[in-house]
Picture: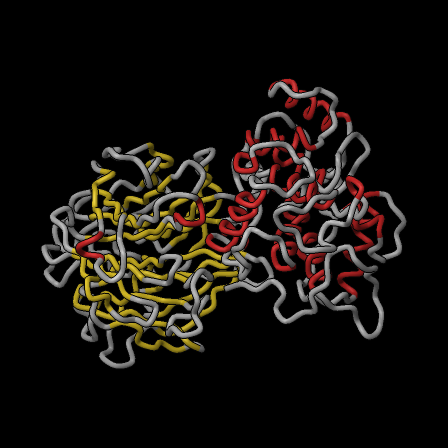
Amino acid sequence: MASFSNNLPVVPFGSRVLRLQSPAIAGTDVKVFQRLYDTMLELMDPPQGPMGSRIPITGIFDHSSQQAAYNIQSYFGIAVDGVVDRQTYRIMGQDNSAYGGPAFGSRPLSIGMSGGDVRVLQNRLNCLRYASINNQPANGIFGSSTKPAVLAFQGDNIVYRHWDISFDGSVGPNTFDILWITSFTGGRNLGEGDNGFDTVGLQVILQNLGFYLGRIDGYFGRATREAVRAFQKAFGITVDGVAGSETFYALGRSNPVFWYSADLFPRQRIGDLHTIREISSTIDPINGDKNPYGVILAPNTFDDTQTVLKHGDVLVSNINNAKGIMGLGSTLERIVQGKPHRFFAGAMAPIAIATSNLGATWIADYGFNPNGSQGIVQVISANGLLFSGGDIRRDLFAGPWGMQFNFGEFYGLPAAFFSTNVLSGTIDRFTGFHPPNFNEDSITVQIGSGFAHIGTTINTVYGPQGMIWLPMGDALYIADGAHDSISVLAPVSTGENDMGSGLTIYQGPPLNKPAGLGFNPENGHLIAVNQGDNRAIEINPRTGRLVSSRTLDKTPVNPVTGAGSALFGIYVALDEDGELALYFTNNNTNTVNVLTR
């Protein structure tokens, strides 16, 4: 679980002058400065080339940080002294006197409070999908609609970015830090001549909506003004070319996402990641089970003080036994300090795994019989113990293969798990469950069907497997290895009917027997791992466009036998510096690995 503070002194961004000195200035405000700078280098497309080079994100204001300050000041035409003061902060979107103050981040914010900092909070949220929850332009009053918007923001960052922040609907230091580095527009009104990082964010949204055709350069000139005016006219709000609270609210209503990334030049692509590091062997230390398939990170959503499973733990499933016989594995491994520790040993060919917000782990078990007739779904506690009613058996099951959870509590939806069936090409939904009687209490219905599937035994099957659930539209994305496709069903948490195979987002090469599916929270893309050629493929579901790819194992894959196929499970998160981290299992090496920059 990524902790942005990482033992640094907690200092509000913009609350002090940052300069090179001895001893060096350190704190979370320095880390925000560094992260924002590197983010802008990814987003911006200046006519004269990049605004400098990336710098290390350490939380210590060193020579590279001073150079970054020089670069910002020189690019935006303010006094060049390498000192981050009021003027430089304003360029970076932090105006301490915005809307009459107090400064955003200078005090905790919660329901019942009011002021300019509350309005900044509302603007920053309203530029993204939280506008539909806040349900009004910013008014500076932290009311009954602002709290659920904050909760949704915290939920998104806990679930998809894996930040270790509170889920309480109030805004304290850790939530402020994540707001600064992920929601950087809305700290002030923006009009012609107001240049800076917040203008970059405005241009990104307007470009994705089709209103801005210029470069993402952070300069609010005529082209940006006319794009704002065109947007305002199209959405029936005051047409003045100035982006204020009314415009920010309309932007979020029109662009319901929780990331800033240009569709034309997306940031944090997997093609930009070059380092693969082995985290641990996945071989069970007791019975030798191997061939890891599923992989997850335990979420920061349950009390782990008295449990075996801890926040941020890597958990993997083994599908083979020690002799390498496919489908006779029975164990889940918890990775601790680079070594596998048995977490559970009562599974039956565990394929995919997923966790609830309370720490319970759900397992899609194909079953020991190669024909899938023993397929079940299991539920185990955060202590690795099978609930007394944790073996779920249903006539609907036909080779459970994929697993996903919707974290419904965070989004005002009924909590639901989803499972794929590789032998029938169907999708099941589980709701109404209560520990410990999951088998008796779970309401299981089929919500998807008609997905391509081939093969009749565990050694030969391909079909729907990897899934990602997103709160925007209550949408479930499904990777199908038999069709080389990614499709979407919606709404899946509340829909009462079988929705068939849904809408195809992408089909064909370079997808090659896609298995696991992940979500890139920094640009909104889907990432699939191919069993057919050991590559990760990144696709923009908004445009249906291939974005990038990355080979994760160089072993050739036999197209007939599948020998050499390494990939199945994938999980995407951010590290403590806000950098993309792609976790994946490798069947060839019996390891769990991470791809990073």
